[in-house]
Amino acid sequence: MKSDGTGRGRSMTDKIRILLADDHAVLREGMRNLLQKEEDLEIVGEAGDGEEAIQLAERLSPDVALMDIVMPKLSGIEATRRIKEVSPSTAVLILTAYEDDRYIIGLLEAGAAGYLLKSSRTAELVRAIRAVSAGESVLSPGVTAKLLARVAGSEEGPGWPRAGEQLTDRELEILRLAARGMGNKEIARQLALSVPTVKAHLVNIFNKMGVGSRTEAVMQAVRKGWVELEPLNSEG
Image (cartoon, rainbow, N blue to C red; front, side, top):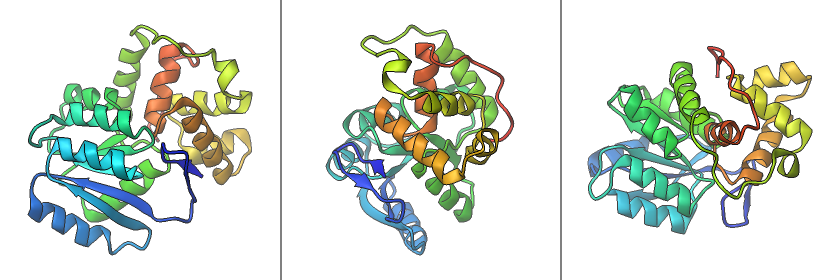
């Protein structure tokens, strides 16, 4: 089960609980109507600005926060950072009209699990929500490589235990493969495991590290020197 930051867990069979954050009410209504047609998705809250999104994330602990990057009161980067502070296991999926790597990397460093262009089709959005809820990242390998290169050059944060004190050998092995850009199916093949087993290990990794996505876990591991930075594959 995936922790929601409050000590509770979410069964893999439960619906994915979504917080919608966009300052345009008509767009929120359209997204809500489209997403609620999916049996495994549930809209649990709507926010019209960044501050309201943070308040609802803290109160509701949604599995996914689907957020515009341009909203009143707070920037997308600051809103993402504060959502991750009040609800660490909430995966933030950014909807953006921008493809500037520098801006996107800033959002990912703030804790976003990925981004999707506003020109994407509904089916792509649904797949992305399911992916980030399962701990996958939704971003291009090129952006991931640039992000990890920046993280590798940053200073180590204080107060983290050594890897061996927190993660098992198998969990470290999976995290290292994830840092190489491997998706769950690739990791399963590499280690002769089932995909559900890989997913379960990733959930344990996220819970132990206090993160909500693969991107965050890999960033933390690279920053701490737990994994070495290697060229990423084209698949994620």
